[in-house]
Length: 415
Image (cartoon, rainbow, N blue to C red; front, side, top):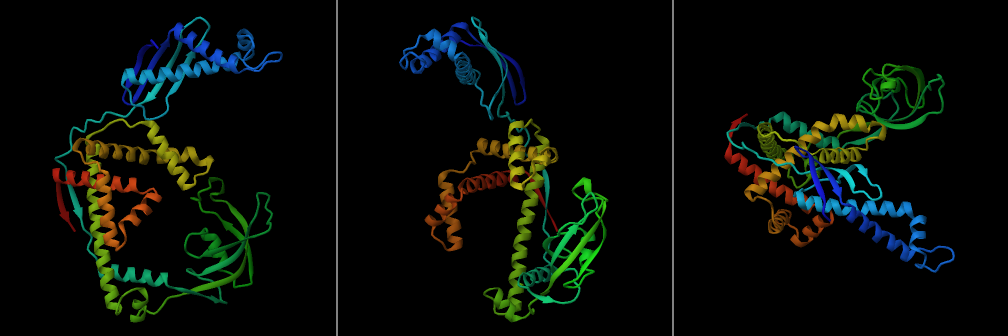
């Protein structure tokens, strides 16, 4: 197909091209489409495929025209990509399509391509590795959290207090001011599951009692229509359960794992906290370094990738359709940064040959299996089934990129 391609815009990741398809190519495609319809058409008075082509053209004119357009645009698009050496990152957009009998077909092709990233500066940066020391209070807090996870709940007959679990039937007045049937909820008071006014209302009742009075909604309530409103509310308290923590002794330590006594448990907790502190310090260095690399090497990111990421996170967070525009606006800077980050890492990995190979992934799986005392083959199959091999490959690649970047720059220690 002898196309005429005229670039209209080449700005950052956007390409806009005017494409003209000669009359001969249009006619040939249209004839081919019409012949196919004629060979399959079933019209009254004719056997299948035997109706006159002129009659078939009249009968299926709109369908023939549409398929002709689609076939020409599809073939022209592939030719434009090859001829202009474009690598699109998303589906193209066709604008201003013109198609008239006896004339060339023309249209504008808008496509986003992978950005060309120079990365002119990757060294000369200075970052600080801050290691947070593990204190006795940290160990105590972690052990208390473990106790909390082993807590039991027992019914009580007195009024609830913060930290208690309650089963309560709640009813709020409608816009007309009417209190309808209530709905049962299970809440942990003080956890933020309900607004403060509702929790205060519930804590005024003992099990079996009903309390009813106006409650004011907070001024920062997520639903703007409800902010600052005062509505009549009714709470019927069904039951109250109070938390009971296990005794902090050697028996508790043995229950938590392979520990001889409480001292051994605390020692292991301290070691784990120290290991996590090291990991947090390393992550902080990576974040600082990447922020400086991104700031020193600005480039335009493809909107298609950003939009795709926003949509993915919206689905993951279960964002309602009505909230999607606001979510997209608020989340866009985060999505842009993630796309920029991924492109920088991919570019460095490609330039320095850091991209993980299949053997690298196999070796990493074997290493993980050894640390877990499990079979490498079974672990590989499990990761493959869960779709996590790509994630492992990306992790290996990123680790190599960050190790290389750290070697090119200055890391100072701080506590």
